[in-house]
Structure formats: structure tokens, C-alpha cells
Image (cartoon, rainbow, N blue to C red; front, side, top):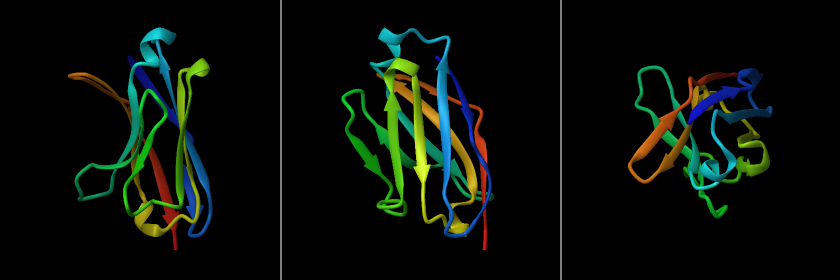
Length: 117
């Protein structure tokens, strides 16, 4: 599974941004079996979970983004998105797309989100 993230950029605090990830080279029947997620890594910090969506569509969010971020998946496009609202400077990080199935984990290349105060 090869993951390609896009949509990062610079936004002012309080603004919104959407990042997306496409699982290229993955067939539909494989993609739908994977749990998909977004992680982020801020400068000098460890990578942390932002949000995940299971194969069945259940979602889970980090406490810091609950109520502000929404993860979704479009299986027909083999894609996931993260809609981010009410962004804060502390949301600044490189956002990584992730796919998991069993012991297999795949990472995208990351997309930078910068929130200015």
C-alpha cells in the first residue's frame, strides 16, 4: 500500500484546512480492510495519533482535536481525509497518513500544516 498525502499549507489560527490521502497501487478489496489514520509530528516532539477510522467506519480522536477535526474515508476512491477546523498554532506539524492491517503498517510521506497566530 502506497500512501500519498496532500493538502497541507499555511493557515491563520481559527481557520480551516483539509488534508487528504490516497492509497495508490492498492486494490479496493485490500484498502477496505485497513484501518486508516492521521498522525502528526511537531518539531522536537514525538509522532502522535490524531484520528483513526476503522474498516467499519468507527472513529477515534485525540482529546486535543475532538470537536474540531473530522476524519472520513471514501472507499470508492481509496482515500481518507481530515477536515480541520478552529485550528490552533499548536496544531502545527507534519501530518502523516497511516494504514494498518494486522501486523502491517504503512506510512505516507507527510504534509506540513502550519498555523500562524
